[in-house]
Length: 486
Image (cartoon, rainbow, N blue to C red; front, side, top):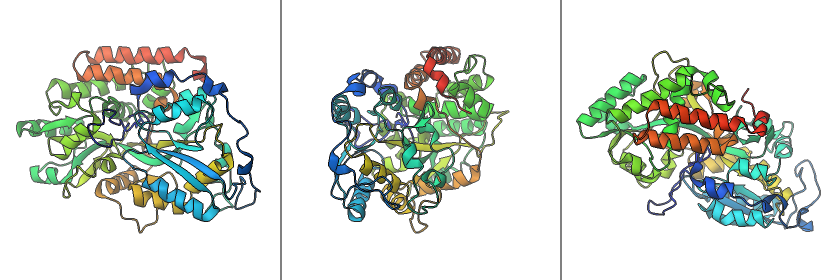
């Protein structure tokens, strides 16, 4: 889940659209919707009261099969973001953990991550393990700066459950740890293997005789044909501009290649202004706006409202990450045939059509002041076992960051299966932006600029200017030098 703001799975905080996800946000996120409460995170987080050592009864004897000394009979406090993936998977994990290690869990599934957890962090009494996701995610960079996160290096260097001759980190898909890194330390485990891009209905395309487009011109042609037939071209989740940035930023990456991605992540003085790729990407999306090819009303909708209209065949395409299918299960017609599509190519793109933004989403953290640190570390180690990865796939219809981590007997739904096929076709042609995880304030500024662009309140030139200003502002923070996209 990617991610992390609305990656985040922009969750609908009004409660009018049913259970949301995205925050991604962020979620991935995504993001900046909650920047005010997140950034007001009290300094007590770093120095708040509470017993740093945890309860004495949580530390047991260590062994090869129990490297952290998780204590039988101890309790684990688990809090999970209950969005597009639900929380049944976590309940299944907790039940198995109790059976195997004799450690019971208190379980909280919620979308109100900030509301429920910020007071606990501030009081020095956080849970033991948290899926810190959704629109109300407490930003990882904020938690890190407040000294509230455990360095997960010890977990990643522990013997893997399935093969103790290997470290946990050796069994993970390459690059999936990157979004959880702050200043060189892994402080969040982004657990779900996520892809981002466009989505369409196989049924609608078959009925209309449309071929999934590989070029931007072909994409526009379908949007124009859809408009003639009273259907929107592109839908996006207007109240959460994280989502339209999936399209804009993917176009920039594919046009300019990995150097364009690194320029933004590494806060280059020409990341936006002076970048031909950035100009081409934003102008391409603005053309959709100018030609009236957006689904009517999409700018004013939440993620679930926009996605539901797309499920009702009111738009040909929508931007999203691979949590979309889970989030829309109740609203998706049985014969909809949900399909994933890599972002079509602008002329002169450096990456191939098959290239996709892919990586990990849904950050799990262990608070530094967790009362049961041995139990939390052991729980996370088990998350990276084939048993628990398969349990997750069964309950949440999604892949994890564990290589070959899902038993072949698990039947995935059409949309998720199409992301598996897209990932195979992409091979090593994958990319991932890290700025949303490193710099939540900058990410918010980029999203705000896109919100203005989609509403035609600013033009592409001004969008580039505002985005560059956000980059330049972030570059002035000395701590930024500790992050580098290699």
